[in-house]
Amino acid sequence: MQDIETLKNENMNLADKIYIFDTTLRDGEQTPGVALTVDEKIQIATKLNNLGVDKIEVGFPASSKGEIESAKQITSLGLNSTLVGLARSLRKDLDAIIDSDLEYVHTFIGTSPLHRDYKLKMSREEIVDTAVDAIEYAKDHGLTVEFSAEDATRTERDFLFEVFNQAVSAGADFIDVPDTVGILTPILTHELITDLKDNFTTPISVHFHNDFGLATANTLTAIECGANQAHVTVNGLGERTGNCSLEELVMTLKSAYGIDLGLDTTRLYSLSTLVGRLTGVKMPVNKPIVGDNAFAHESGIHVHGILNNASTYEPMSPEMVGHSRRIVLGKHTGANALKAKLKEYHIDLDEEQFCKVFDDIKSLGDSGKCVTDDDLIAIAITELSSARETPIVLKGLGLSSGNGVSPTATVRLEIDGVEKEKAATGVGPVDAALNAIRELIQDDIDVELEEYNLEAITGGTDALAEVFVISSDSEGNKSTGRSTNQDIVMASIIAVLDSINKLLLIKNSNLNKL
Ligand SMILES: CC(=O)SCCNC(=O)CCNC(=O)[C@H](O)C(C)(C)COP(=O)(O)OP(=O)(O)OC[C@H]1O[C@@H](n2cnc3c(N)ncnc32)[C@H](O)[C@@H]1OP(=O)(O)O
Ligand SMILES: CC(C)C(=O)C(=O)O
Image (cartoon, rainbow, N blue to C red; front, side, top):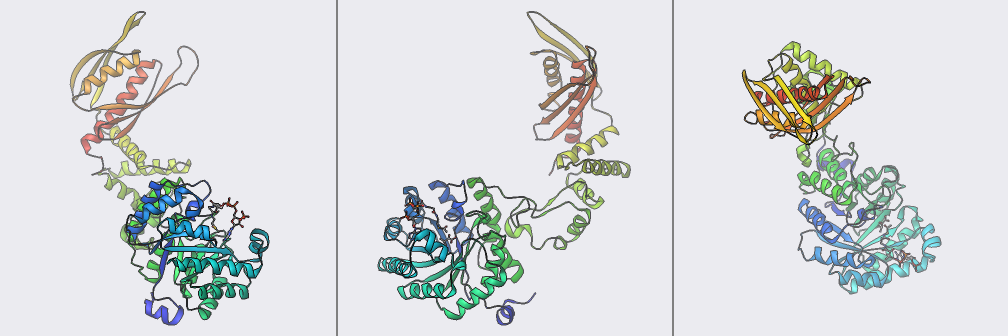
């Protein structure tokens, strides 16, 4: 990879300082259906500050009392990041910024023919006058001003330059280029930002939307052409399909170009998770950087490579963004992956058992199922238990039930070669038998029945009953048990003992993850 100085000199026109302007709390909150409380905004702002973003747009104070309140409370935290509020080019919106104790305003007005003619119903002159009046009013009140020409990318170039020139003359400290409906492409971005950089010395910011999935690529291009600032949101939230994603931009700059913006990127995943939880907008599994699959591997060839050197199939490490690597089992699993998983769970299988478990995983995959770690443990335990003596064996069962008496079960078990018997009552004969079993094994293992499913698999009063159970122990280990019998109580007891024997095997082999 070329070093940054070479890139700067030969291929790119990078600004000396690139500012990250996060607008999760403003444009991100404009995601349809999202509304954050004051406390939630405080939590996100604190994390953004700890990540190290330069600026946080905390909201649009003129839009509600809650926005003023959250801006005030965030301001009172004394964060290092510069706090920004959005305002239309209206004095009343700027007053709301001042009332919120903010010192930096992001003020905007639509400049494209569509916005002028259909939305604002203003002439070019009126747009310029309104923008200039707002900037001057803000400067008179001591604010730092960032001016956005909304829908800049559909604005005639001569008028865009006129608006920006007038904004700069009125005192704008940053001029921002919103691609409001995300119509730019990298080559168009290159042309526009290069033109702006050739004509303006005021720092240039970009605010790019993702309607065609190009927001990050376009923002990166703008930075390559000398843009001084990028507007971003956590998880790429924002109007419609959102904005340039903070984590994608920052990690592309860091990993692809070696440009370290000074952010603590190890905080990116937990920030993304917090924003996902508070906004209710869950990330797709394949979302770059923060999605569940960003560092997950199933294909045998990939896992084999990863096990030898993770860089074979990872462009950055999960640790860099505070995420974690996952090896997933399924249809595409290879032997190396399975061996690694078994090692992780301290499961020792001989070659024959290994082949059987491998085949079972492939069959599950072929039937369209994904294979969880719990499935693997259950499959491996079944394989191991078929080769070992079961610690608990049913030796006898007596039942009594009737009208006006509690159903009672007497169960006789052989536990590690010693026979024991216990009677217990319950709401029905199955419950009574399970209570007796629980008492008999309490010195060996503490078991909870998590799931109990009973199905008649043939018709009539002598129908075969199939019982499937899932039990768990106090360590959180789970196992399944299954039995088919004409007697419902017998089917239930055998299924439960089957699962308890597997749990004992897990416990005795110390198979739970260290
Ligand atoms: C591209 C962007 O993301 S811009 C930010 C968008 N965000 C939001 O709109 C979220 C918060 N918005 C709100 O709470 C409300 O829309 C408010 C409080 C801002 C305004 O509410 P209302 O006064 O009821 O107006 P409404 O939303 O219906 O219409 C917008 C008004 O702002 C005017 N306006 C829009 N942009 C600007 C601007 N940049 N400068 C001056 N006036 C503007 C419109 O012409 C319209 O004025 P009109 O009511 O006199 O016709
Ligand atoms: C307020 C402006 C910058 C905006 O959000 C947009 O144009 O998308």
